[in-house]
Length: 151
Image (tube, rainbow, N blue to C red; front, side, top):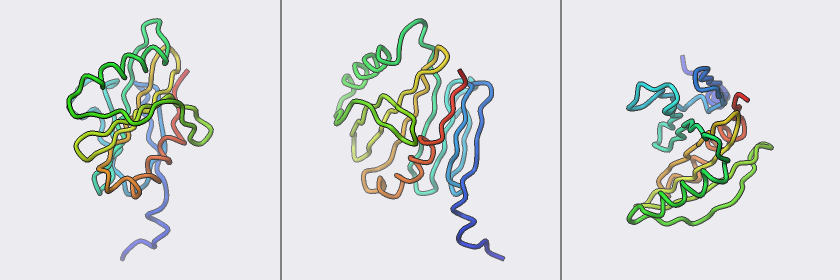
C-alpha cells in the first residue's frame, strides 16, 4: 500500500549531539553522517534523491569570529580555478541570520551559510546543479530555517 501524498511532505528531525547541532529536513531526503571521515565534527549531509545536498561542518574558531572565518573562506574559494563568487553578505532564513557566500563552478552552485555559536562556526553548504536549484530550494530553506546550534 502506498503512502498518501501528504506523508512525503512531512519533515524529519536530525540531531548530532557530538557536534552540537540539529535541524529538520524533508522526509524524502537522506542523512549521511561523516561522509569520508571518522570525525563526528567533520560533516553530516542531508541529501535529496535528485542530487542536491546540504553539508554541515563544525569549525572551531580558536578565538576568532564568524567574520574572520568568512574572510578566510572567501580567500580560499578565490584560489579555486573556475570558481566565481557571485554574492556575499547576510541571509536570514526562518529568523536565523547567516553570513553567506554564493559560489558558482562547473554548472553547480554552492551557498556557504555560516553561523557562530559557542566558539564554533557551523558551516552549511547548500549545493545543487544550476538546473536543480528551484527544486532544491524548499529543502534548503527547511534545513537553514530550522538549524539549531548548541551554545
